[in-house]
Length: 115
Image: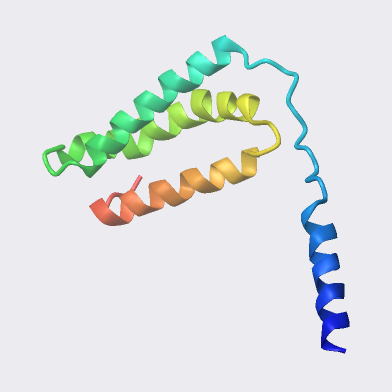
């Protein structure tokens, strides 16, 4: 009886292991170099803002300017649209706005800033 169960299990594992995995759909759409360049430029600007916010040497007035004006403006005007064009199925406007709010809330609480 143990031999029959063993061979049945072995056969089932062999059949399962030999099945071909479904192929992931390959995107035939080429990435727009203009959109990619805009995204990379915007990403660099946002990273600069984040570096300044994480630095202890950044003056409070500059932090307020970044958190209340510069960061949200760059994020909404350039970063979000280009990211949604580069990865249309992965990101939505609602999700990206929520991510922005989370980041801004963190820095507002950390630096005690009211906009």
